[in-house]
Image (cartoon, rainbow, N blue to C red):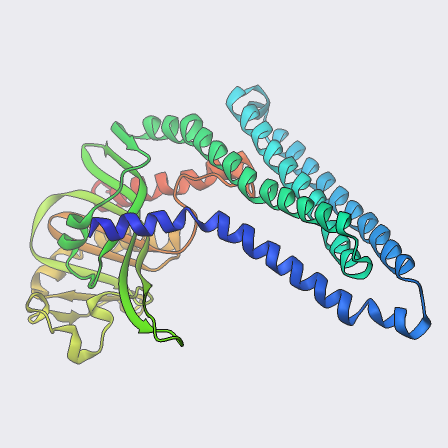
Length: 399
C-alpha cells in the first residue's frame, strides 16, 4: 500500500519535466504548420524571396511580443504598487515587503522566460525556410533555456515564496487565534481517519500536507489538506503482442478535512452530506447503498426544515439520535460552514468526534500563489480560521 502511494508521489515530481517536453513539442508542431501551410503561400504565389518573408516575420513577431510583455509588466507593477498602498502596515511590515520582492522576482523570472521563449517560434519558422544549421542549433538552445526558466526556475522560486508565506504569516496567525498549536507542513491524515469515517470505498493511496492541531476555547481540533485515490493496475497487450501494465488513478476525495473533539458522545453515527458531495457509499444506487453490513440498517432522514432538506442528505441507523443531535444550533453551524465555503461538504458525527470534509480541487490550504497579492493571501488564510472559530462558536458557545 505504501509503495503505491510513494510511487504516485514520485510520478508527481515528473510533472515539470513532462510540461517541459510537451511545450517543446507543441512549439515545434505549431512552427512546422505555420511554415508549411501559411508562410509558403506568398513565397510560391508572389515569388517573394525566403529571407524577406522570414526576416520580416521574425522582426514583427519580436516587436509585438516585446510590446505585449512590456504592457503586462507595467500592469503587474501597478498591482504591486497598489498592494503596498492598501494600508500603512504593509509598508512598515518587513515580512510583507520581503514577500513583495519575492513575488516580483518570480514575475520577472516569468517575463524573462517568455522573452526567451516566444521569439523562438518565428526562429523555428525561419529554420524550416532557410535550413540553416547554425540557426537551428541556436533556436533549440533558446527554446530549452526559455522553457527551463519558465517552468523549472519559476517552480523553485514559487516553492520558496510559499514556504516564506507559511513561516511569516500562517504560523503567527494560527498562534494568535488558537492555543497549544502544532503545525507540521509535511504531515497529513492517514488511513485511520478514512477508515473511521467509514463511507469512502476503494481507497489505496493517500497523501496531503499542512497538518494543524490546536485548541479553541478548550475544544481540540485537527485539520489537513488530504487527497485519497483509488489506483488500479491494468494489464494489456500492445500491437506487437508484448504484455504491459497501466495504472489508472480515480480521485475519491481531494480537499480539506477538519476533525473536532465533541463535547458529547454520539450513540450512533450520523452522516450529513451536501447533495453535490460524491464518491461515498451513499452516492451509489439504492441497491448498493446498504451492501456493507455497516450500512444495512441506515435510513435516510429528513428534518422539519425544507431548506436544510433541499441542500443536505442525512443518513443514520438511529433517526432518534440524529434528531437529538441536529439542534437549531447544530443546523445553524452546518449552514455557516456551507455559506462560508460554498463547496461540496460532508459532516460526520461519530463517537466523540465531528468531521468536516470539504471536497474541492484547488490549491493547498496554506500555499501562496503569485496570482494573488500577500494581502489577498492573508484574507484567504482568514477564511480557514473563521471556519473553525465560527463553526465552534455557533455549535457550542452561541447564546
